[in-house]
Length: 115
Length: 345
Image (tube, rainbow over all chains, first blue to last red; front, side):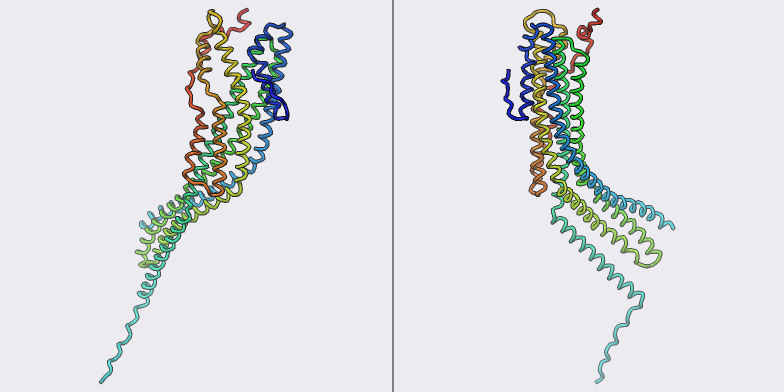
């Protein structure tokens, strides 16, 4: 079983809670609690579930913070995608024009000798 | 002594013939001039080494797109492992006491919030992938070649048309148009390639810091997911294996509830590839990509460096080498597992 980590700053909270959860879900703890009364087991399980929910909430908050930063950058990135796509369309338009011209002239070149 | 009469000057040629001669000389000079111009431009293009730089853009775009797929895959697997770990926790809780609907739904709600956040993050990751794809599409565009082909084909057609018209009209005045277009094809191809390179370089200059910032944030994100994956992995790997495989097996000779399931659980438990190792590989790929991206901006990158980056990303995509587990047994192999309390009564 891992030793309890000390909490010196907010970044230590999540590791500390995870370490606590590891202890509460360990085989030793589970074996001991199985010997206790129904009331004790109920309270124990309630605390375990609350701990799991707290850890989930903290992890979600951590991810949300990073996600919001990414979204801010994402807007500028979308501008880049638009500009790159516009550049590509302009190039392709020029190429398309040349291809269309070649198709038209190819037809004309077949018609002219027959006139 | 009579002076030899000076020979009179040569009679001037007739107007039409002279005009033809002048035009012929002009055409020849014009044609030669065009080829000189094209030769000069081709020399200029090769001297600018635009081709190598273009390849750098293509390479990083392709590798960048693969990298985002590796990150996305790692995020998805972490989400799956998180659900698995939470489900096993709830099964463990259920073994100790009855769980109310309210408590079960609270767990579901917390897990759903986590998964919603994960989904939104995947969108951001795939957004970077779209950017790399757009970069690659511009860098790898065949538009210059298509433009040149189109103009060259047009030149041939014009040549055929002008040949016919010249015969009819008895003049050579239509010949220049086809030649001009052929020359224009080469010039046009160079111009469009330069434009593409200019647009790519401008894009890199304008948005290099944005991409740099995103890669840095993704490195932080992968760090968070590493811790999440480690916790889930430890629980699923050790606790679940103990509960499903070791625990039921030792200390008793009673028949196991479901042998096929026990066999499958043992195989899966022993062969399970650690997700944290894959996340390690993705983090390494992220760092390599950050370095390469910086080098691309300062034009310090060499094409020889790309295979190493491509390998780092390919390793991240493939994950750690392992043996795949067989498919679990069909549920009907273990009817006892499916028996509910209601059925028993």
